Length: 468
Image 1 (cartoon, rainbow, N blue to C red):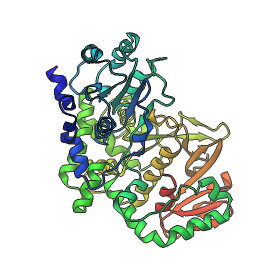
Image 2 (image 1 turned 45 degrees about the vertical axis):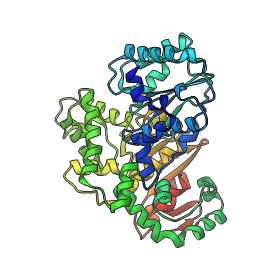
Image 3 (image 1 turned 180 degrees about the vertical axis):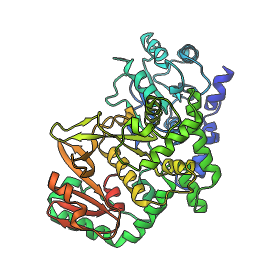
Image 4 (image 1 turned 135 degrees about the horizontal axis):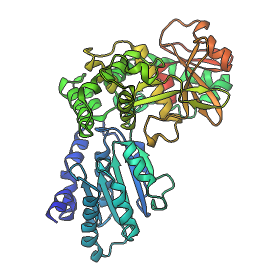
């Protein structure tokens, strides 16, 4: 029990939660980011929730905040059980851990218990332990929240719990880094509410587009500066907090994030050298379609399958999005054609640049293209909790003659084409392929609004806010 007390100091005194290092760091942070996913859990019902997302994004902090709120709402302290699974070697140890807590809490006759198992994706076959716990009836009157940074482990684990997830309709949640809209909210005094301006509505209603322009055009200089800052910092809370404090990111914090990525790969017997080469190679192709074979050519490995393995692991860890070619007539992805690769946050992109010996990626056009890709996926992808390696709602399109549309989102069975031209001077040739192929779409510009029938030009920071 001494080990359990170490992780659950509120059993002795509910006020001890305020001394928790994650709560303390949150209280001292300049941003105190409370992500939307915080309110997506119902702790009044039997359920097995999962929360996944990249390392260092704040999953443990969110978990501790939930525990603090439960304590403040009057939940009995010993009805709340938390444990970090970083050092647990296998499913048997997970089962024995829950059994120990069950035997401790059962005589106390709690109406509801709350079990939090942090970073459970690190434990091989953890789902077997949870399955046994549920089958023994220990899940009655219990809400479980299991967190992890690997979508493949959490996904497989969840899929092996048929009929054992409880009453939660959407039990799998995702915590991603701050979006550009989050960054604007936390790092400026701007107050812009653009949620009512739907993208489809803007394309079809000239008045709505003019309203959007009049609301935002005056703020473009400030929004452009914020976008430049976001491209340098990204949305990981610790990085944003340091940027607000000192105006830049230190080498220490960059090395911290890079070390976390390396260590996760080394835990599963992957090479740090090959990881570095894969990151640099993905950076070098800058969003151009590529096959796994062509991606692997400059990398020191005898098989493209190794590079594919590394790429898919990055995607399963929410660090890389893999985007497929659109079969326009069928409205589905074609996995046999070249794929596009985009880092999931500007910080990850800049870490890849750092590995390549570049202090920070200066090509804002490519950085904005990656940012638009990820924000489209965050907006439209329905099964993002399965990782970023099998995106099914956002594609790219290319003709047999090599004419390309950067992105095509599928929303309510309708296409939303998007082309990124992060430049001040715009000509019709910049969107001719989109207009000819789809008859409509949005051109993401540096600072230009325009309308040409159902082709809209929208400055990048405004477009990103619309995707919140």
